Image (tube, helix red, strand yellow):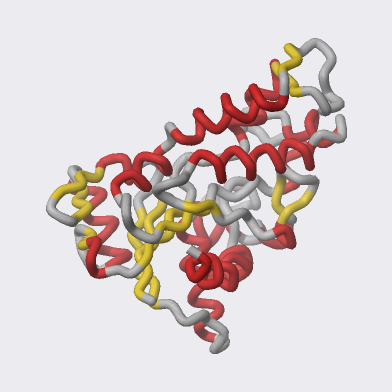
Length: 254
């Protein structure tokens, strides 16, 4: 199956993981072509005449460098895999700082809401992300979507220059698993009919809302270039390798 992979910087872990599996002869029966752009660069795509074409030269150059073409011809692919694109658990953590739904433990000093209200509110917020917009460009096609990785679990201790989204507060209160489930449920509900959600594999998850350390090791050097283990947001090739075995079965179920 010829697969078009579109994403932001988190696409790098998928590319590293694919190369890792291919080198071991363990890659699934897919032919992925990767089109990535940093930050919200995918926002600058124009959908017309069966193509996704960057409106900015720098985004076209990113596409050319990674995918071998400066635009995407939709009919060249049997399926699409969207990566990252501003869908993150941070959105729920910001909500959790001031609100909690019935059933959570960390409710002190917060507005208490019905779980159904929280679910509807967050589903609407996720539908309005770059992921939702990009999926809309692909309506009528087979589209799978993967959120940005949960941040590495060491972020619980905080990091200089990184906002505290409340990982430690949620986990310490015993709400990590419930927030993680709400994240999966609301993202999954936000994407149809244009795409279906692929959750982060459970084996990679720690405390419900973070990623296990092994999947973040060396990401600072391999992906962001920061070095020193300072990048909690990006994951490594082992993370990508954990994703790929779930992709083909998910596409076949669609």
